[in-house]
Image (cartoon, rainbow, N blue to C red; front, side, top):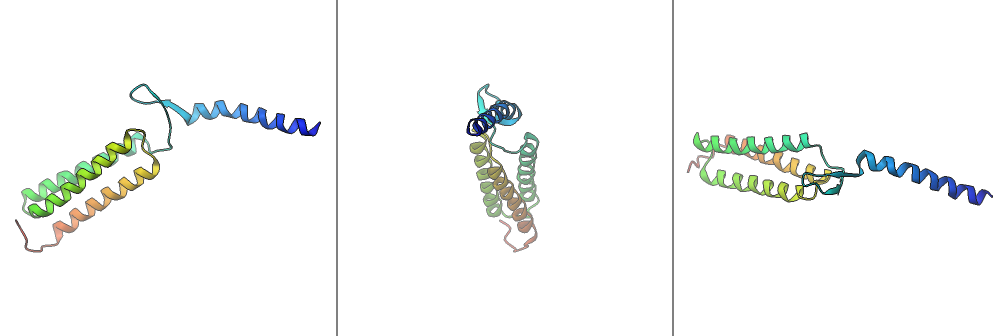
Length: 128
């Protein structure tokens, strides 16, 4: 009799938990109306903040070129890196961005901002 009660208890527990798990973060409707699995990614607010930081970096590159603080060659390299990050973000967000992908993109944006600061301060005498 115990052999029968234990599987029945486990089965009733699993069946009772599964609908609750589906309500709290399993399946959801995405922007296209399709049902997709929530991959445990970042919030929309975090992604918007990442996009703002990337845009700030691109604006900083443009301002630095206009003020002749960095050379065209340095700006080209920084812009190329910013475009690569933006492409990676677009590719990753097609099927829902994971936490690991988001962390990787965050690190890349931080590196871009750091490179911009370094290029502004290097005073290597190569202005165009």
